[in-house]
Structure formats: structure tokens, C-alpha cells
Length: 344
Length: 270
Image (cartoon, rainbow over all chains, first blue to last red):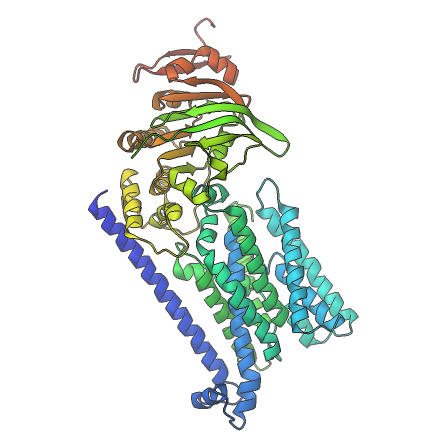
């Protein structure tokens, strides 16, 4: 090997590593900034000092309720669900090698949402019961889609199309539940069909944080194997990746993240779908997309919720705003694959 | 590097679903040489390669590497000794050549280990060997078919295995790029002693570049040995159902197969 090649290889790698670290740092800063803004800014402005005192447990007139009881749980839940959707979504996209195979497109989020709506509205269960219901339904649908679309180890376009069909069925099931239970009010409907952070409480937030603490590290420990799957099953296996184990762990952990987040806020539209591709644009295609995608997811939810609350004359739920962002990208993706003459 | 890895199959039967593709195959890959597997479409060439590299579990029988069953070896340990380049590997969108070649280092990396100086060296050596160093920072999407194939081979080289299995490494390449890839593999065999096993469609390329030829027919072994012994008119008829003349290639001295179809034949049929 020539020394010039070695120098060039090292230089290129260091440059790409540096870009990745810079993007991760910038995303972390942006997320942190959005958290601070969400806590300080609203119908009433509270300075950073007041916010900090509330977080430290002091009683500040006005701020203790608005920041402590309203803004803080809402912001933490936005952050946590954003991380969950971003990481869970990109896991599916990477594993299936298809940006359309995101859990919010192929019906996994819809399953969690329908189950959560059923558990809350019909059965009247509490947070833990709802989360268990959601994760069981989401896993069940993930397995169902996998079995229906599995032919000779290949599950590409079929999986996406079957998933879209199942998502449509589950969404109408959700609408049916809302209707039957006499709960067809806008609040419940937007939450379980589009996702909303309105009325967030700590009781809803804590299970999501727990899911993030358990499934997040599990997924990150599989980061390298997941990126190997991008090369195709045969190449990944020939390079020493254990396909079945990687897939099993990734599916369970990603479904766990999506289900817990969905049972708290509903399926915040398109966040899981958008976070991965945006993150890939920012960091490049070399390394693992998990962390950047989680941060992009958090940023999307925080920004969309802030805009939904304060940018317009009326308040929009977060899922309506992310839906408006995501739909054009979905159309772009479909047009592009169509033009390239490829399948979905 | 040592060149004495023994890769064999013992009464190997493999298949997909209800279909048995290879039945009770006994085979020996000569160490330190270039072996080409030839045969008609769907005769089980790729299946054999996938089974030898642990991607497909045998129904019965074994694939043995140095006296151990391949399918019982830990995935990464096997991947440090035996590499496989499948027929149609997939490049992630937007990945650079250097990053893709770097993926070949996976079996040498542990769960939390960082990228090392050795990894950089292996990538640089692989780029040099495949004459792709000037492409290192380019996106794989922008490359021509010939360049892309060399990059995939570079990835397999970065894996630094002493055995390398390739499934039709020359398909979709024009003749000059075919020769380039086969010359490259020959260099690798000559300089590093890497044992190479490849599936080839082109009988004449196989006869020219391989020291050992394996002809498969109907999921079993028809013949194995030096090209001059294996590539005969009888063999072509038995394996491909085709009449032919086999002459001595004036360029290489190896056998050269000339097919005899229904048209444009000016000699009497054999």
C-alpha cells in the first residue's frame, strides 16, 4: 500500500468523523435550545431564572403552575417521544433498506394508537396498562406484516404495500372506537389519529422515559450490525453479521420505542418517517443513523409543537404540523422512485 | 500469509423450501489456487457458494473448513478467514467508496472498539490493490459498473480473508473490465496466496483464469480438475446440452470452447 493512499484514507475518514461530530453537536444544541425556549416562551414569558428555580423545586408564583405543571411535562414528553420516533423509525428504514418502511407508514404506529385508544376509551386502563396494550398490538402487527410479506427471505415492496393497507384498516378501527365510545371530540380524535401533546402529564411522560432508557441503549449496541444490513442480507452475513438476532433485537426494541411513545401522544404524524432521511442528509451515509435520527426526531416534535401552539391564530396539535411537513416528502419519494423506474 | 486452508464439502445437500438444489456433493477446494465453478443456469452454483460461506444451512452433510463445520463456527470468526462477494450487493445511498470499503472491516471490530490504524491500513491497501484509490472520496452511486465492481472487490479485500468466494464477479462488465477484474484476482492469488473460488458464466474465461475447474450438472459434480481435463466436448454436452468444438487457445494454451449452434456452422458436426 502506498503511503499517499493511507494518508488520503485517513484524511477522508477524519474529515467525515469530524462532520458527524459537528452535526451531532449542532443537533444537540438545537434540541437543548428548543427545550429552553419551550419552557420560557408561551402566552406568558418567564425568564430563565424563574424556570430554573421551578425545576429545582422552588415555588415561584405563576411559574410553578405554568412551567412546572404545564410546560415542563409537555416539553419533556415532546423531547422523549421525538427521540423514540426518530430512533425507532430509522431502525425500520435501515433494516428494510427502504425509507417507506417506516413504522408510521406500515401500520405499526397505527396499531399502537388503535390499541391505546381502545385501552383508554373502552377499557379505561391506566398508563401502564395502555403501554402494555400498545406494545403487544404493535408487535403483533409487526409480526403479521412480516409473515404476510415474507417470500424467500425478501420483503421489500410487498411489505410496504401490505403495511399501508393494514395502517388504513387500523386507522378506521381507531375512528370506530372513538365514535362508538361517544368520544368523537376533536381532542381525542387528533391525538389518536395524528398525535397531540395537549394535556401532557408526568404520568404519561414517565413510561416513555423508561422505554427510552431501556430500548435506546439496546438499539445503540446493535448500531454497527444494523448499518451492515444496508449492504443486503448476503453481504452482511458474509461480513459476520448475525442476521436473525440483529433483526429480532432491532424489531423488538424499535417497536417498544414506537409503542410507548404512541401510547402517550398518539402517532405524531411522519416524525418516524422524516427523521432518518433528514439525519442522513446531515451526517452522510457512512456511520450509524440512530443517534442523529433520534435528535432530528426530537427537534421536529419540539419545533412542530411550538409552531402549532403559537405560530397561528388557533392552536394546532403537533401531529397536524408534522403532517403538513411530512406529506410533501412522501409524495416526493413516491415520484422519485417512480421516475427512476424502480419499485417502491 | 498461509495458504493451507482446507475447504471441503462432505455429502452436502442443500435447497430452498421443498426444492433440493444440490444433492450429496463431495468437493475439495484446492488451497492457494483459483477455482472456478461452472455449470448451466440454476444448477446450484450460487447455492453452493452461499452454503460454503454459511449463508445457507445444509439439509444433510457438512461444509468443513480446516476440520471444523462452517455452520457451527462463530459468524465473525468465519468472516475473518472466509469472505464472500455475493452477486448483487447493495450500496447504501450516498455512501463514499472509502466508507463502503471500510465496511469490510466489520469482522475485525468488536462491539465498542473504535476504528483503528490497522483498519485504515487495510482500507488503503485494498484501494491500492484494486486501483480505486483515486475514487476514495467519491460517492458509490456515481461510479461506472466496472469501477463499482472493483470497489466491491476492494471491500472484500479489506476483510483480509485467506479464502475469497465470488459469485459471478464479471457479470454486467464489458470484456475489458472482465479481464481487468480477473487479472486483479490473479494478482491477489499470486502475491498473497489468497485461495479464490468464483462462479463464472463464461467457460473460456474460467478455463483461462482458473487452475482448478469444477463443473456442476443437476445439483451434482460432473467433473473437477485442471481445465485441460475438465473442459472437453463431452463435458460441454453433458453440462450444457450443447455441441461444441474445444481447441487450444492460441493465447494462453488453455482449452477454448467454440459452441456449435444450428446456424453459421461450416464444419462437419462431431
